[in-house]
Length: 219
Ligand code: AMP
Image: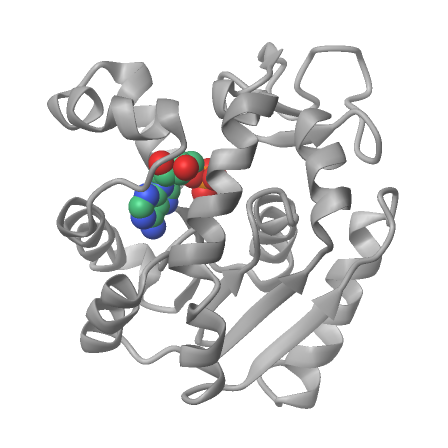
C-alpha cells in the first residue's frame, strides 16, 4: 500500500523510535534527515564538512541544503511505494518545498511534555554503526552499550547533552512547532500524546496504527 507520512514532534519525542517501528510494520522506507547528516559527517564528505557546525550547536542546517538532500532521497526507487519522513520538514519553507514534490497522506504528531523529553534525551543512546536508537529508561539494549541489531557500540550524541538540548528546544519552538498548524489545514493529523517518562514505545505505535486504520490508510 502506498503511504506517504511525516512525523512531527519535539526533539526527543520519540520520532526516531516510532519511525523505525513503523518502517518494519508498514514496509516503507524511513527517511531521517538527521541520520543522513550524521552519516555524511561520519564519512567526512564535503556536505558533512559544511553541516557539522549546525549539528554540533543544535541549529538547523540551511533550508536549501536540506531540501536538496531530501529531493534526492525521495526520488530514489525505494520511495515509489511511500515513505515516512522523520525530522523533515522542520521549517515552513521546507514544508512548502515538500508540497511541490509529493502529496503527503497523513501527519503523525507526537505530543510529549517538555520535562519528559529532557529526561528522555539525556538517557538516549545511539548506535555509532547503524543509527538505531535506545533509551536507558525505556528501551535498554540487551547488552549494555552494544546495539541489539548490529553489535555496534552505543554512544551519546553530542547534541543530546544538556547544554545543546535547551538550544534544540528553542529552535524547535520557534521554527518547527508552527508546522503543526500548517499540516492541520492540509492533511489528516494523528496526534498521540505521551505523558509518562516510561511509556512503552509499542503502546504509542499501536495508537498510531489505530489512527492510520481510522483514516483507512491501512486495513
Ligand atoms: P535529528 O536527528 O532529527 O534530531 O537531527 C539532528 C540535527 O540535524 C538537527 O539538530 C539539525 O542540526 C539537523 N537537521 C536534521 N533535520 C533537519 C532539517 N529538516 N532541517 C534542518 N536541520 C536538520
